[in-house]
Image (cartoon, rainbow, N blue to C red):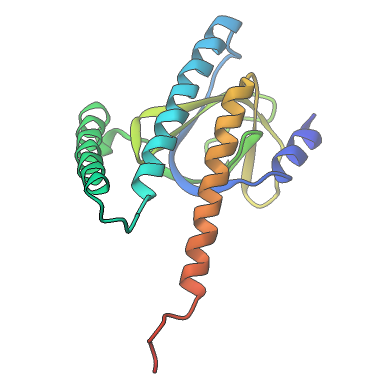
Length: 191
């Protein structure tokens, strides 16, 4: 299982970032608890995707409707930040750690990870919605030998896996676009 899980993880596009994250030892959730976790994760993924997409849209349309949507968006962003600060202040968040994640699992630093074979719950907090972590049940498996450990996710529904894949793909696409924009020579500079 270890090699198959690692291969499934390695063969997919992943999101490399520094997340506020915790990885705690836990018992494998029973079917009822797993259903609740999957329902919460579905809601978190919908909220995070909507908030990230809205914040990254930078249209150049100056129509009155677009301007009104932008004003509403700004108000909603302020409201979300207030809610985030009230529900989970920055000082209460777990520390940021480098995580590489996709729908199959996550690679993260060995420090603090339990022994191989231990059931765990990985919680990822996204900046756009800090108070609602993505809760990912899994098992600690052997992974790369570069100082990182590997968590293979278990019990996620297909809709949660699809939501993670879409989020990861959109984030990867953004990172590639930003890298290309920074690599492209600026028009008019140096002439």
